[in-house]
Amino acid sequence: MRNPHLKKRHWDLIQDALNYKFTKDEPLTLGLLVEINAFEKADMMMEISGMASSQAALESILKKV
Image 1 (cartoon, rainbow, N blue to C red):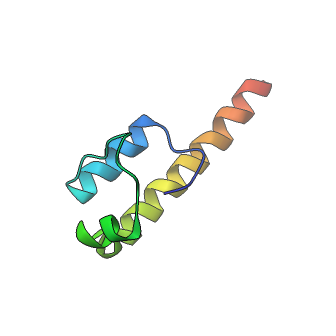
Image 2: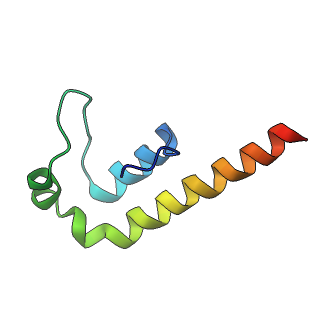
């Protein structure tokens, strides 16, 4: 969840997967992640994070073209 390549579209997918809407004012804590059962969805979140990294790499390549 600390992937610097996560954009709004990725956060929207994460929020949908967790059925939870994060706010900018609310700190992202271990307690909150436990409360919303985020660890049960770790595979999904890692997939979204990987997708974000892959998309960022593609965007970087396309900018060079």
